[in-house]
Length: 186
Image (cartoon, rainbow, N blue to C red; front, side, top):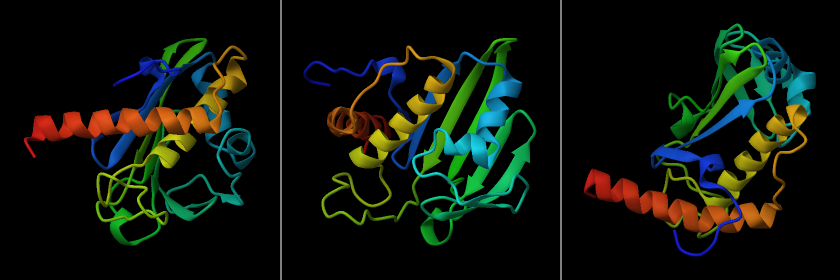
């Protein structure tokens, strides 16, 4: 990546495939406390991009936020797997929260988001790497959201403006797509 970044790379999303982003944070809270924030409508409303209008924590339950999703799988204190509504998203996993106990006061939180392989952004030119790929605005939004979750438990979490995150992810995602292409020899 060229230029100086305000975002430490260890806080940036990982990109295991062109259609997936993974955010990882160590939260200064027990698994039980973290679960109460990621598994309830009230808890999610404190950190999610758009507070949910409906959240039913059960397989087949509804998760309505800025779009409608379905909870595909729940493992108490461990994971919530969410399917996207339809079309190319179906079957990709959509979104997933995973928790892992580090010790009594620390939890590893993993947020995975996937894009349908044929999804095209509503914003022209938003996906310079083609259909099904992540784009800077979305990556920045998820990054800010995961920071919001971490900030519930730690006031010292760095704050970045939406524009700073967007600018970071424009160049960061370009680099990540280049590396995936190199590894996949495409």
